[in-house]
Length: 194
Image (cartoon, rainbow, N blue to C red):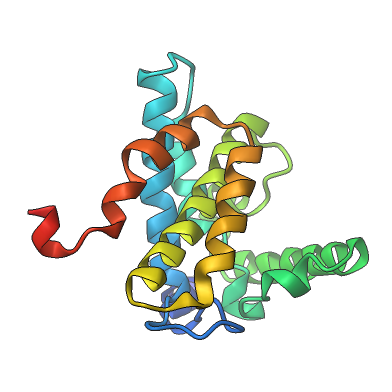
């Protein structure tokens, strides 16, 4: 059996920092973002099942969230204004992400690779699940904006507004519930939470 470096690379997520063009009061690692996204995705999936009485593979959604940005281990975090500047750059970056994901998958032993491939390639994934994943990803970014604003950092104010608008434009009722019921408490101090 040959040595696999997949998990060593995954553990490097804690060394990749997001929001590189912004002045941060505290750096956010890719590892933190992935966990936050998974926690929010879990909530959105449960809301879909319990409140909206729709089918949702919540565990699958959480797994997709955990691995949704793994390509950035190899590519780094491309700032959103650059990544989505125009269709050509967006398409080129998607290709780079695909190559990075394939490189990571190739590090796995043959017997484990089939279990990970669907977590990295979403082409056959349920579009409704991917929509919840995207909403969770955006909510995680919004939480970062709230935390920065609460630290007195105005750098994230415009991002907070545009991310909130983009979440509402997605028309994901579960995300709207999260914004109304759960997001406000992210603005509280530890004493106010108690």
